[in-house]
Amino acid sequence: MNADLVFGIHAVEAFLQRAPQDVLELFVMKDREDKRMQPIIQLARQNGVSVQFCNRKTLDDMVGGQHQGVVAKARLQSSGNEADLAAIVAANDKPFILILDGVTDPHNLGAILRSADAAGVHAVVAPKDRSVKLTSVVRKVACGAAESVPFITITNLARTMRELQDAGVWIVGTAGETDTLVYDADLKGPLALVLGAEGEGLRRLTRETCDSLVKIPMFGTVSSLNVSVAAGIC
Image 1: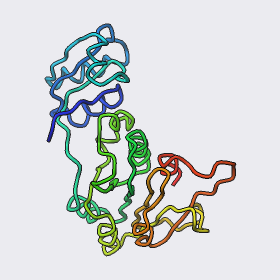
Image 2: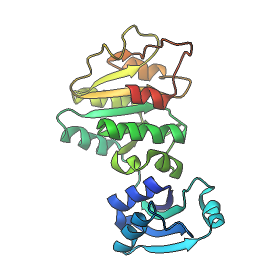
Image 3: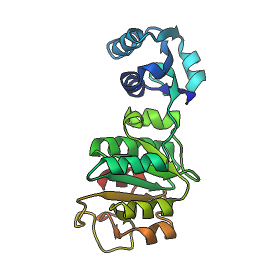
């Protein structure tokens, strides 16, 4: 594990609730001992976490603003790997996996993790290269979902997809060139949904490895959706 900063009220509170032993220190802005902050301060003290009160500039210097008055220094679990994904698939009768083929924006990943948590996704999978990592910005946008949904980074996406298929998981990719709407597709049973990078969509090999393709119908004038919105709809 490595130490990093988690910031934002929801992200810090979720981290304290799920892994208080990994919170090393809590920094709270002076005069922010209000109704929203009190439960966080109490939770930290109950778990023996040192609470430091400091001015806004100190927090701004730590994380560049957007901290909502609270920053935690924490030991962060590293991303999972192929073996972790195999264990997750084996442990669930109907595994539900979300695969991201090259999503690079931390705000998009944070929003996707939040939707994945709400939808009961067992793991979010992404390539190690050319993809965003679990940064502090991702954790803030995810509002605690970065701690609840396993995030798996793998070396070879096509190989991992074939291993999922061998394990009985049906892989559905999202692509504009198909005629099958996501609302008409059979999405029951062991399932992996695949979404492509912002603006580029699925890479050719990724698309060819999918068992089937679906698209979101677009009834307005815009031709595409933000990947985190598309993930939420799917």
